[in-house]
Length: 377
Image (cartoon, rainbow, N blue to C red):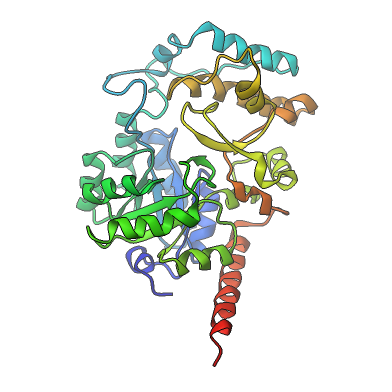
């Protein structure tokens, strides 16, 4: 295919796959798409190890990196905030509510041990250090979410000749990103898993394209609920240069998700993907579970803390839930959740990542042929 994205990234099919799992990234790129590794939670040392593995398993095909540097957090402007110092700011009522929830399900809370100088979640300085380390490898794209990338990120990308992408959920966000100098926009509708806005993909794509047209020609990737090649074709019919996908890769054996979560994905409907702040402190779509229901609906719930504080409450608890569920605790299984979009309702099986790419290609071609058939001779 010939789209601006294919030309910019050196790929044959404009299907971008965001994943926290290096196996998914490598498999997608080998199959002709473009894998993007989520680097949130990595250190410069660990990202070197992950990218070295991808280099050794991607058969020379291109891949990218997603660095999450939020514009707005509760600790914005502060320096040298560590994980452990941030823990002291968590109110007792939030600690107690989480511990009580786990206790009622028979789950023992296991706190993660971190070194004394470990950075806070979503730490911008650590993210830039990870980015510097990543450029020791042949990455072909860097992407940022939750705001305009810092100037240093855009400058470093351009210095290395690597396009900089940014996720947006509204047309005004797109205008800011284009004016800031990003090279690719990922217009992500509210259907998406993880952090998302309130505008649907079907509305957002043409809105963004119309809004940026007078400013600069920037390729737009469609995102949000895209699980099939037919949906991909529909987005490209609206003017998108390709698609950015995430949730579809969670139902692959290579993904970081547990077998229990993949089983729950198959059982779920699209309405089971709920948008809530109870995992990170910002609105993020995830699978409904007894954990999300308690925080959002229980009248005794203290509610979500702002980012990055809420992550310190939820992540240890949900890791403990996963371990207990894997050991056979049915109450813990009810609490298992993870980021996932409304496209979860289309998941009916677990398929290898390479097969998902091939299915996208064939489904895309069938959709295009159907459209061509409507035109007649």
